[in-house]
Length: 119
Image (cartoon, rainbow, N blue to C red; front, side, top):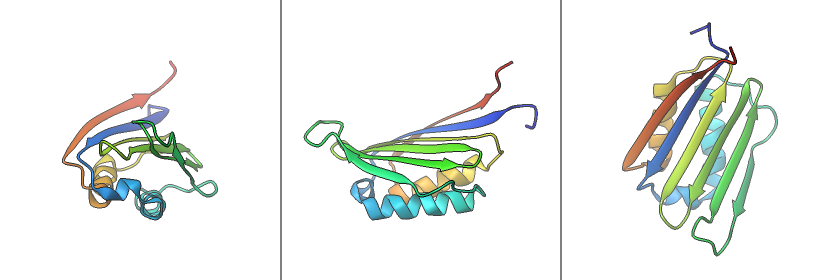
């Protein structure tokens, strides 16, 4: 896979457990994910609860890593969550999916994986 610049895993999850509404769980999730997929965090994660009162309210997560970033959005009201793991360093996409499953127990997970390269 070294002929590509980057690797981008996108997970669209539905039927998640109540952990999607718990800031502390989201914090421990990102710390665990970064460690297990062998990335290096560049600072602390940003975790903010956004759009209160809106149907799309929930936590948004941004973790810079030395090789790019990990983002996630958690919707309180409908139990959905969306994850993007983008890195120029190769990582185990199956392990990343397993960690999401362990923390948020989605009933359904739509998986998209693409390689990135400008040329």
